[in-house]
Image (tube, rainbow, N blue to C red; front, side, top):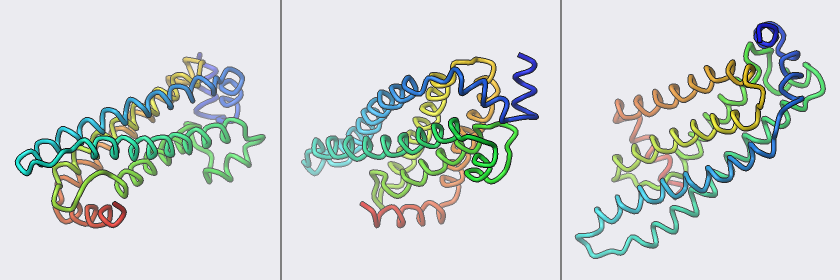
Length: 209
């Protein structure tokens, strides 16, 4: 274990050889597909019950929203997960260090940090611009954003767990994954704490729905 940790910290390219040898990319993809469906069900249910409460007095049926939100969130999740999986696959199969540096611009102490951070931030951006919300429903926007960030963090966690079968290398990446989840939570809190920022996000996302 010690030599693997040294490789991760000092020679990332050596650590990648350990990972590449035992990586199970197929298992990781199965986890992403299953989790995307589960995440879509959870987000759609949240949107549905919120809409039912809001529209009940007006006699509006929110069933259409349930179906629409499931389809849209499923597309969003699958798109984000596919991009993340491609990045991981390309990074693991890069021939040499120069190719990796070309992708991520620089040698990182944790080889998977760039993949996790980029995919997480990109996923948050997608949910910001295509979330099921309206400009007059900031509470729903916050709930949706928190759920989305949580689902993405757990999906990344599961993808790494089932793709990297060497536990020692995986453990060295857990700290980075946890840091990204915390980062996304801080983003949500900053939006909640700043009405002006929240309003700008809502206006921006409202142009896409």
